[in-house]
Image 1: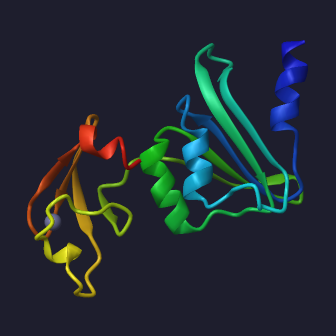
Image 2: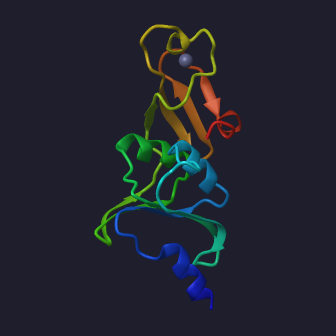
Length: 156
Ligand SMILES: [Zn+2]
């Protein structure tokens, strides 16, 4: 019976993206970051806090007609490290991406320091080195401001 319920979530789609093993509670944030809302024209399946095979809780998102860009994969790796992204084409998994926090991030996050050059009107995008992944700690390459998990959790 449990298996039938799971099939509803992971049932194969012709083209699109399945994101599995998302940390519990992060699925809605993922849709937000991907810009998927009520106006999205294709099927979106969302499961929050379902039991995985390893008997821990996870979220799952299935998005028909959506292929993630590199930039989107990059963003999601901060929100859902450890999740797996499956790009589906013609009902087959074409590509499997394991989301991992990178060593460096640009654009996605704003520097906390209001006087930082990346916050000025100069055409400079924010840029951070990741100095710790767990807990997540970033350092701005322009002003050296360090940003910790606590601040970032509201942004991610
Ligand atoms: Zn800065």
